[in-house]
Image (tube, rainbow, N blue to C red; front, side):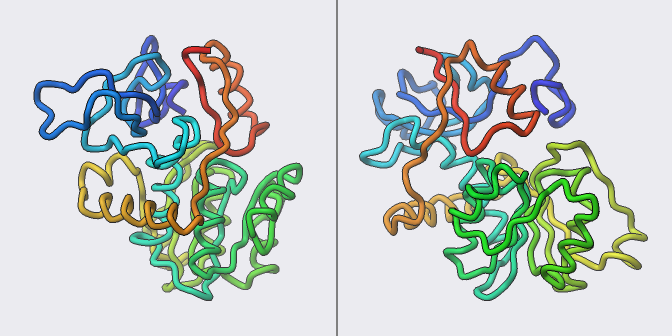
Length: 280
């Protein structure tokens, strides 16, 4: 979405793309209070991550966990924090509930499946057939083809309704997500629209799908609710200590291969976390 200029209505080319990066601090800006020492390895988000150097907001720079490489830490403040925010403070998942995770083979999706199982939920996941083995290995109880011609009907037949939907696909799955959520008690957390924008009307919410609909952008959450974001990071550290959140295994490519990697991502031919290395 960002490379096509459709992410939050921009930016427009030419510009340096990318959100999340991990690396070594080489300098701190003059306005940073209590900066981490130069040489500290951190992971965080900010504009222009597809580069050898970037300016990362100090408030969101998190030290790489001890014993982890920079690449293994990728996903901590983007994929895992997004999945955790969708499940806990926004989704209020409880043990025994059923959670529907779309695009479950992707970076956020894989984290969401792992976390939902950790919190005692039954997980129904969508993914393309070639990725079902990967998603089942993460612990998903049921895996459905996300491009099923009657996705809403298939989900209704298999689940009878779900308590929480994590929606990141958009146009292709949004109607099925609204239909799958239980009336009134069902929650739908939207944090992406990979297949295009979808809309919902007041008529839909009053007469057709009486669900709790919530939007999530992890960068906005960090800026608007720093206390909540801090609690998310504390919980992620606890999950690392428990072994629930293992070191990542991103598929690393040279930065020059970025266009090819993004095309594969857009076409749904990738799994898990992808990374670009500017120094290879």
